[in-house]
Image 1 (tube, rainbow, N blue to C red):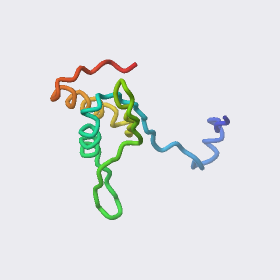
Image 2: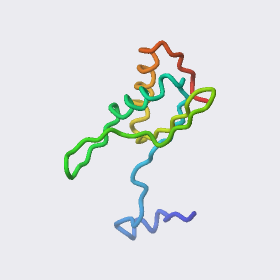
Image 3: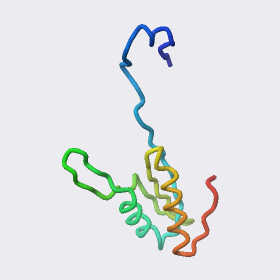
Length: 104
């Protein structure tokens, strides 16, 4: 991978390419009887706002797979929303008396 060196930046007053934002992808394993409830609450907690039309849509999960040991639900959030996600997950688990393990 090639990056522009500092001298090139001084000579050029703009960048052609920039990484503007980052998404974090998380795989949450949750008991089957809480899976649909988790997905619905996640969608309400992380609403997607359309800046052009002003509408708000529930954020969908990226994917989910039913496994014997619990459902694997993949979600993605903006990097700056990572703390908000963990707070959401802690609250979700606390309200349902679920034990939240530290990330692996």
